[in-house]
Length: 379
Image (cartoon, one colour):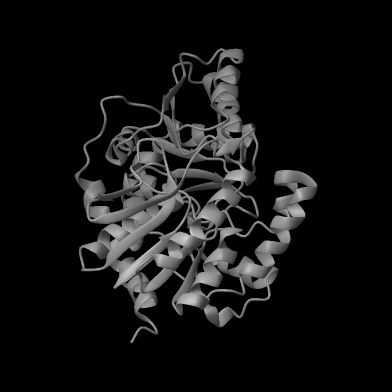
């Protein structure tokens, strides 16, 4: 079976939780005989057509300024949407698996599914609803309305969390029977084999440096922790439009010796290595469709501190006091949880529980559910 994956972002050229999820699914199912074709943006360093580990990549258009002033470029989204149509019209595939973003492209995919008479699956990570207005002002009305419309298009929606499923049902008029909730998975066997890094730290964050990740709150928390633990060390792994602002904040708070920015790390195992050499993972993000880094950190044996925000699905992955803590979004509350873990070594005591809870999300258990969605309705 040939699967056409539609997303303007593709791992390993674009590192994000959603992209890693799709790539892992393709990797596991390619080994089972499926053929995956990603119709995506042609990222710097990527050939127009190439094969990586048996997975086919097709660059629909050349990626330029993907982000403008820290936000996804509307022009790039439109360019991808337009260029996608003639490519898919000629492509050879059995099923379409389309990512929700950049949203407007779903109109093209729906038309192709009708013309080609192919089954259309839409993978949904998070419902934005009124957040569109906060994101791009009055122009958000277009995103708001399109989001409502396109949820009616696919044969099935694969939601990555119960949080997202509940929001789809409450914020759109979609028939609940069309939604299949399948969480994101991790490769437990691979993570277990990774050795801890020699670069030890107390606190770690991994993710794109975007405004809603609230890494500035984490840095302010580190300043409070520093009052009791002068040598506290925090690693921030990732890149993004907020990086320079965060570096400036670190300098202003005199935390240059406490906060290290490691930037983008190519090898995911190196990230796991750093996690294993830290004591607590902090995710102050206000928008997470699932929060795979929570499971990855737990699998590495460290607890997670995240925040109680209505759009943060990662909080649903925490069993309070067992594999982490959920608190309010402010530096004082986060600092208290960090110090609680550092003071009594509770992080080490939580290690086994963290790792046991993470095992529920092993890809070996989850990928069969994805395969079932692809096979459903195929003669």
